[in-house]
Length: 396
Image 1 (tube, helix red, strand yellow):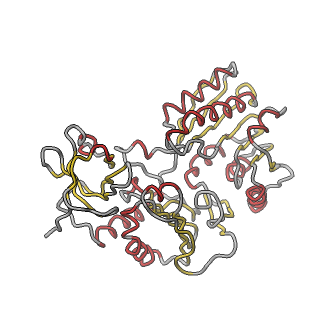
Image 2 (tube, helix red, strand yellow):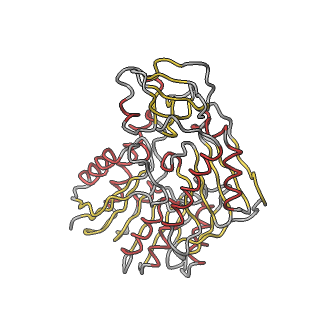
C-alpha cells in the first residue's frame, strides 16, 4: 500500500500547467497546504477540484514550491524509485555517448526527472551537485546507488551558490568518496585529450554541454582563421585546429585557464606558437582587434543569473555580438551562445539580430545550436533550455 503524503491544493486555474506536464508549481499557485510538510518533503499536488495530479518535492521557502517527481500519485517514492530513475539515466548515456569519450553529464536534473541533481562523469570519478531541499534529504541514498553501480574512484561535491541558499541549504564543497585528486584530471572527448580541474574549474571543470557544438566547429575549420572568445581551457580551439584551421586565437581573461588551454593544444598535437592563447578581456580585445577572422566562437559566461539582471545582460550580449560581427570577414561564420537561463532563445535571437543590424550587416541563420543529448530537457519544461546558440553566416 502506497504511503499517504501530505496534500497541497492548487488554486483554480493554476493547475493547468502541471496537468500538462510542466514539472514546477510556483508558490502563488498554492491555495492550501494540508499538514505541515517541511522543506524537501514529498507531497501530493491536488487540483482545485480535488483530483490528485502528481507527487513531488515541496518547499515553502522558495518561489518554486513544488517540483514534480511522478504524475502517478499511487507511487511509493522510496530507494527503489530513485534507483530506477538513476538506472534510466545511466542506460541513456550508455546509448548516446560517443566512443573515446570519458567526460559527460550523467544526470541532468529535471531533464532526467531528478530535480535538483546534477552528476558529471570525469573518467573514473564523479562531480555531484545538489540544488534542492528534496534532493538534499535523499543525498545518502543517491550516493549509495551511484557508488554501487559505478564504483567511482572519487566523488567531489560542488553543491553551492544562490539556488541552494534560496532552498534554505548551506553550501557543501569537497571530496565525499574515495581518493582526493591532488592534480588535474585527464579525460577523453571524441578521442581528444583534455585536462580538467573539477575542484577549481568553472561549472564542474569542463563545458560538457558544448561537445556537439565543438564537433560542428571542427567541420568548419578547414583553412580558416578562427577566434575563440571566452576560450576557457581551449576545447573549441583544439577542435578547430583539428579541422585544419590555419590559425586559432584563443582569448580569455584567466591566465590559469589559458595555461590549461596551452596544455590542451600541446597534448593534442598543436603548437601554441601557431595557435596563440591570449590573456585579455574579450570586450576590449574585440574593440581593438585589427585582424579579421573567418570564424568566431562566442561562448561567454552567463550574463544574467536572475531576472533583474536581464536588461544589463541584454546590453552585454548585444555589445559582444556587435564587436564580433565587426571582426568577421564578409562571408565569415559566427557561432554565438548564451547559457543564461533568463535569456530565452527568442530573446537571444532578437539580441543577435540587433547586433548584426547595428553593424550594418545581414546574417543567414545556418543552424540553431544547443547542448548535446547527455543534457536532455523535459519537453514540457522550456526553462531547461538554458544553453542556446546560433550559427550564422555574415552575408558578403
